[in-house]
Length: 266
Image (cartoon, rainbow, N blue to C red; front, side, top):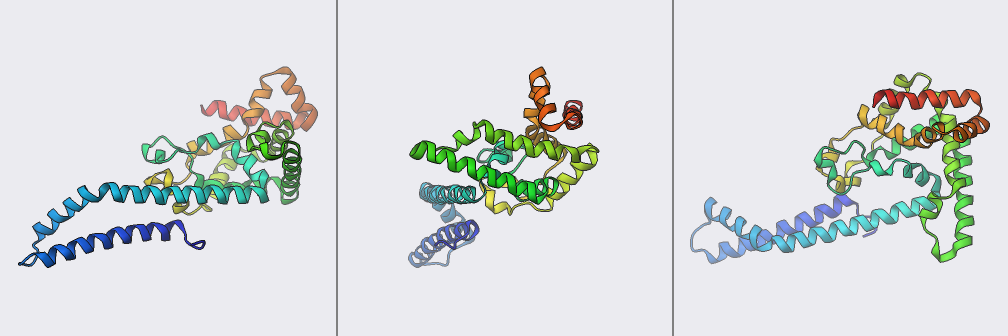
């Protein structure tokens, strides 16, 4: 059971329903004095759909609930090893579609971007800095867990000033890679699209997740969320001073130019 994938489990559910229909069909054929016609089989299929739809729907709901619980467990297990990844994703998680929302046509970001996103961040920041941030974040999580014990919740980390500053520091460094904004944004989009997670991992987002890829609008929305705290700081005298003191005047100007690109694209 532990080795079952979402795809294999969905096949099991589909086959069990198919086998159930075959049992109904076989029983009907046994009762009928004549061979079943196409029309009688179609009528039987309609009755099966009407009479067994609630049972089938309940089985599918049970399957999806199991998949979501397993997915949440996998995320939590991974977060223990790489908590900084979770902090990074929090920056733009509000862009992710809810269950089925991908089919509405309004979603611009899928969770399928995550492998390529992490790769891009590590490439731009450098492995050494990225590993340092990962280690520092583990220290923050460990300290908070020790402090609050059983009351620990990830919201505590999300709201922790040191944790948020850690993410800002990383993107403060990464901002220098966007001197040529269009070129870097295109590079980011292409890298993410070449490392998309399998669609079945996030099938709950909607059927269109199968053919989804990151477009220009999605790339801009992603970057805007990642650098949103800098945009807020630049709008305030104290915030601007904080950026200059922490990252330097040159970096502050680079970040300001980067944020300006988002405004021009709006």
